[in-house]
Length: 153
Image (cartoon, rainbow, N blue to C red; front, side, top):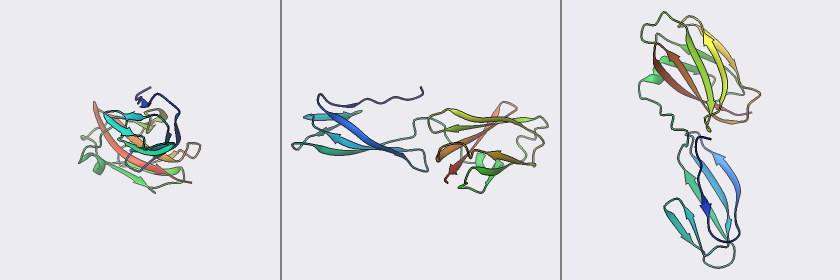
């Protein structure tokens, strides 16, 4: 597990749904009957009966996209239905093979392969994965290059 959050109070507090946006933030909705409910350092007070809540959390993975790195990676089409092309451009003038990993917003690796020559188009199939945001990470010569791909069906 890469991230865990405790939410709730002392009574019947329930989350009903969770969603992830294109930036990897996640949203939780539900209701609570406790007098107060804690969302990290934020405390919400019940107005009486069943009160609903909506909470937003930042990307729990901690994968940051560096400003100039996405220029080294081209992902097309994006968003994708699962099949997309990845082109890796001259990475630090590397003549060695690169590794590509694709991870979901929880940090689980869903794809891993060795890429051949740079400036070559590589086809990646994520059609068996759930819809949502995925991070594409290219590793070569001790450097990492990152991009995002949105899977929608």
